[in-house]
Structure formats: structure tokens, C-alpha cells
Length: 338
Ligand code: QUE
Image (cartoon, rainbow, N blue to C red):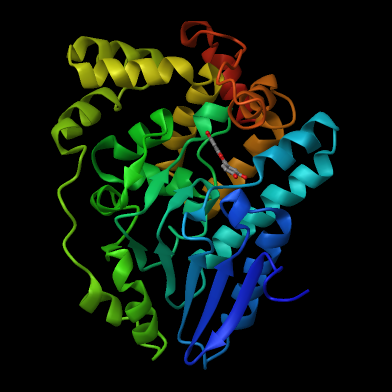
């Protein structure tokens, strides 16, 4: 296979290793082959003293990485191919752990769409450079998944319930917003990335500090207090009541967004984040892997969500149960036991 066809392109460039996620027609969404390619980079360079840092980029100019290959996972779920599903998530989460433990800088150039799995291959190490073209989100509740790839560890540690707000509503953050939220560490205009890459090739990660600019104010700044108040509630129905009590257009919009998401997924996601707040990254990844076996293989909402959002694109999922008020909290807790 030539470089142009490879879905992950690894290169040694001076004192660094570069990794390109190269499936631009799928917005570089990770399939199992790409996960294995990224793991190969971790394995090759972790103990190679000549490689001072790794630089991760997405091909095509539109996306860093749109997530996981959820269409392929849905096909496997419909076919009853639980072994393929298990391999995908087990290897993806092992990669997330490997990046966290890489032991040297894993530099992500987040210039375009970065959702779900894209956050998982960047957020556990640093620096994470967002441009004005970056668009970060955890959109899983729209397809009845849950915040995975180790974000059940990361999101509860963001300030002021921002992580809970992001996970439940799937709110999209532009580059500057993502720095304010803590998902990215530096803001660099995309026009400066080629020069930054050349500087990094010298092997000194401190170049990032010289290129970073102070990001424009957060678009969510005016809502920070409301986010802290409303998303601290212990259960999804209480979050909805708190949003309705705010009496603002913004809060009403957040409630309307939550009403479109999978009620089961919202409840699972909130429970997962609360448990994740008290757990280590490894424990979070274990908990997430156990949840995939229930949520992906057994619950109908995941297939239905991917159908409605990505396959038929009618955006009219039919959830079971259909209403947040009909979710049985004991049934949600039971999903964490297996
Ligand atoms: C929620 C998700 C994903 C999503 C949309 C959601 C996700 C994912 C993609 C995606 C987008 C474009 C592609 C593609 C996949 O969309 O995980 O292959 O071309 O990968 O609402 O979790």
C-alpha cells in the first residue's frame, strides 16, 4: 500500500514522529485498522530515545477526527458480531491508555472536527493545539452511546460542570472555547501551524508556547453560572427542572436539546460521569468497556440513533423508553453491573 492509501501515515521527521489520520472522506473517523496504526506509533516511539515527541494530525483540512466508525459498529451489532465490537472498543480504549502513558509529549493539531474518538486520541496527553477552525464535541447522547474513550475521567474534572453540560447536550465548542473549557491547552491560528510544525521538528515542545495566542473570550461565558447550577443535579429529570426554572432562552434551548437525546443514554452518561469523578483513568476505561457490552449489543437505542443520525439521516430517532421521565433509575444502575 502506498502512503496515499494508508489510513494512518507514520513518519520520522527530524527529532519527532508524525502521525497522520488519513481517512478524510469519513472525516478521519477511527476504524479498527486506524486504531492499530496509532497503537503501532505508540509502540514504536515510546521507548525510542531519538523521538522527542509525536505530532498527530488529521488529513483533508476539514477534520482532526470525527469519532469512531459507529456505522461499522452498528452493522456488527445488527449482525450479532459481538467479537468485532469487543475488539474495536477494547483496542480503542487500550490506545487511549497508551497515549496517556506515552511518557513524552503527544502533540495534537486540532484543526477541524474533533468528536468522541478524536478527543480520546488527544485529550490524555499534551499539548493539544486548537485553531479557530477547530470544532470539538462529545455528541454520543444523540446516537445513544455515552462519553467514552476515557472522557468519563476527563469530563468530571473540567470546572463548573462544563463536562456534564458537554456530555449531555453534545454542545460544540470552537477552538477558543475548547481552550477555555480545558479540552485543548493552546490556541494557535491555523495559518501558523506549518511554522509551528517546523519548529517542533527540532524536538523541543516549548515551541508551542511561542506560537500560542490568548484565545478570544468563551462564547459560553455568559452561561457559566447557569451551567454550574443546572448540571450539578443528581439525575436527568432534575437537570431538566433546573433548566426550566432558569427562565432564559438559553436554558430553554438546552432543555429542548436534552429532549431530543436518548433518555437511556442521558441517564447512563450522567451516572457514568458521577462514577468517573471518583475513579482513575484505568477504572474509567474499564467501566466504559463494560458499558459498551450492554449499550451497544443489547439496548435498541444505539442502532436506532446511528440509523437516524448517520444512516437514514432523518434525525427522527424512536427511543425506548421515549421520555426521560419513563427511565427506571434501577435499570440504569443495573447496566453498570453487566
Ligand atoms: C455522535 C457520534 C458520532 C457522530 C455523530 C454523533 C461519531 C462519529 C461520527 C461520524 C461523522 C462523520 C463521518 C463518520 C462518523 O458522527 O462517533 O464516519 O464521516 O464517528 O451524533 O458519536
